[in-house]
Image (tube, rainbow, N blue to C red; front, side):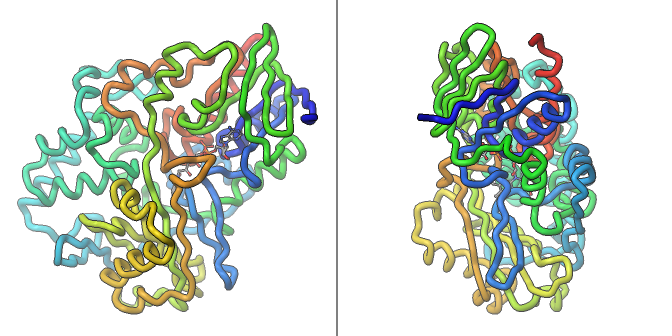
Length: 452
Ligand SMILES: Cc1cc2nc3c(=O)[nH]c(=O)nc-3n(C[C@H](O)[C@H](O)[C@H](O)COP(=O)(O)OP(=O)(O)OC[C@H]3O[C@@H](n4cnc5c(N)ncnc54)[C@H](O)[C@@H]3O)c2cc1C
């Protein structure tokens, strides 16, 4: 017999979105139950401890100065951050060439730099005009949504190098190929992240700060405050609405409430059975919101040896398997850690590979950037988020062409007593932890303002 639970609100999913929603509702005096499928909280945020106690993050990790919700959350919870290592030259690999650069702009020819500069500016200007709460209402929305980001890149960047760097931007933000993304979606997400510079920079941008103890301290601290309200090992299978109440069926639990918050990625929200069935527009929306593909890898070294050579640890490449790296060493630099991202097509190519094959390919790529020492770490770990049963891809879901303009209004619209949260529903930093926190705050306010 399942355990019977009674609450004002049931929250499905104990990621940052679900936990923030639950905290705000509990603080407002509501009885809350959070049902989480995994054996841990945090969802796309998860720490890993290396053999000698160095903590790294397998999922979301950085926050930036423009991320108001996460910064406030960190301060409310009394959590400390430290700056990402950002000293020295970055590397950019193009074919056989390995270029060094001081700032974010590599030493490329003046034609390429001018081409890239005008394309970034054009993208930022277009993005500024996309309304964050209703991208489908942008001027020319149909036209913007009727093309892929790749089409725009080909028509707006003249040089092959600038095109490749724009494609790298797409992979690093969406973990998807620009051929898969609606231009309108790329513009929306760029605007939601404060523009290209804000999204791509370390200092002053989205990669500026890290959490002491790893980002999992955030969901852990929220869950600690919620205590027994959070139930683990409780995958929700079915949500039934009967008049003024909702019944939520999970493995081992049967919970009744006045309202329910579904705070899981769209693809997984679509795998829950709803009775009565959801309106067609909502179901058709979630049929069309795929997650990106990313494998995040960490290599642990005795020391951050690249620093001795004046390198920051940040590297990017126009070719796989490793498209992007950063220095992810602990704050005191007592050990060296390189984090490497395989995104979009690169993640798919190595996704099914045996663990040793993947490790060999990643370490080989790190050695091409940072020299032979990078091929022999003390320890190594990676995680393919597409294999994760309760995530099924990252960083977040993206909108392919036509979806915002045809189905956009169904994204946050509650269905009866069912409310939607999760980073994919955010109007600021959509796809990021900050977006998740914003969505949790928004959905809690929505419920508190709704009739009983
Ligand atoms: C590799 C990687 C790197 C990233 N880097 C960054 C970064 O540096 N900075 C940043 O801001 N963001 C980053 N992100 C994105 C960030 O982690 C996410 O945007 C954010 O954590 C999403 O939170 P959420 O609460 O919306 O969703 P989730 O974290 O996905 O939470 C959903 C929860 O619901 C649970 N669940 C799913 N289905 C069910 C069900 N049927 N019943 C019950 N529970 C269910 C899941 O187990 C999960 O715990 C990264 C993500 C990844 C994977």
